[in-house]
Image 1 (tube, rainbow, N blue to C red):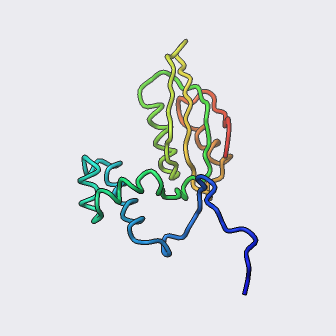
Image 2: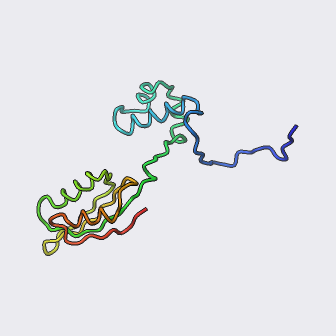
Image 3: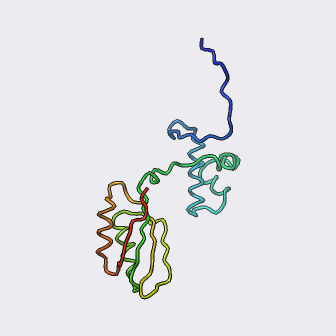
Amino acid sequence: MIKLEQPVQKQGSRLLLVDSSVLPEVFLKVVDAKRLLAVGRVKSLSEAAKVAGISRSALYKYKDCVFVHNEELDDKVITISTNLEDRPGVLSSLINLLSEQEANILTVNQNIPVDGVAPVTVSARLPLHLDVEKLRSMLLTLPGVVELKILSTR
C-alpha cells in the first residue's frame, strides 16, 4: 500500500496538453461548437451547441476552458520590412509569391508612399521546410521591390 504524504490539491488554474483520444467526447464537441461560431457557420452559442450535439449548459461550462493546440504556431513566423515602388501590383506580387511558397500572411502594414516608395511590413507563418534566405532572394527579384530585410524569425 502506498501512502501519500499530502493529497493532491487543486492549485488554481493550470494548463495541460492532453491527447484528445483520452478526453470525454463533450470536450471535442465544445471545440467543434467554438469553431462553428468562430467561422460564422452559426450565429449564437445556442445554435453552436445544437449543431455540435451538446447541451447549452455544457458549452457554457467548458467554452472558456477548452482550447485546441494550434500546431501551426510551431512553424516559423517571420517579419519582413520592405520598400516597394508605388505602382499597381507590386504589393500583390509580393503577397502572391509568399502564398506560392505556402506562407500564411498574418499581417500587412503599408504606409503612405513618399518619393514613389511605400514602406511595407509583412508578417507571415512559413512552413518549416522553407529556407528563409532562399525566400528573401526570391522576393528581391520581384519587380518593384526596392529594399527588403528580414526583421525577425521565430
